Image (cartoon, rainbow, N blue to C red):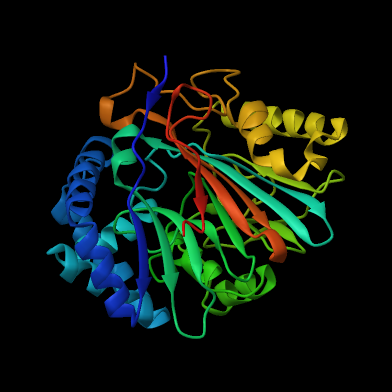
Length: 366
């Protein structure tokens, strides 16, 4: 049975950082209120933290954001003003990955593939608590002297998954590891900085120049000529190079970064990784991905719809044994084509191939 999911809001944001934020907050005011309510429950259930305690911890990151990226703090102030909330509420949304030490169950499977010397395919299933799906938004952000950003994000969050007009794209995989260092960048701020860069190399240099990130995460970054798996942590980073197939794939455990202690958490993560590698390598070997027009559809149908080892499958399904607020499923899929002549992305909200998904959406959306 097919159940169509409504398309998310589409925002074009321009102007000063505060103006960009104010428009974001005003347009998504109900969704931001919903975000705060949902995350308040998630922090209480998963971390035994009240929202007041979350805001107090977020205040440490607020100082870091003000110092390292003042334009993004101004944008967060604008979001707060537009949404009618306190700026610490918005800071908390943007550093929720740091405040939880990975106790939220972001699943996620991402991959990049070298299509040719001037094109990279970058794709991901983003898995998270299903209640968040109604707060997803598509954004185009135009800033002076920076590439235009096209991304899929949550209401109130300034950086997530997408690409820019310079052909730089980002995917994200959550990692559960200690420590967390609030004097370093929250991962959603780091993602935004990547999307403000003109190359993958520049993005890496920017993150390093600002002292790195405050929690353990994986950013899969690519431009038209390169791709890197950035296994980031407060204690040191490791960069993963493409394999012999021209591919980098990642799920929710570090493959090479041993700077931090990473306790086992998602038992399905290694299985998903092996499965994604196997399925994608089969497609590469078959030659079917040589047909440009069908790359997105083939990846959705053959890789990102896969239900092997459900519910912890690539197409992630809710585990009904968990608390409702902690049940994770695939909330969207994105397939980006990072090539100057054909730059763009295909997005499906919901679980690809499940019968419960949106129509095919495209970025840029106008």
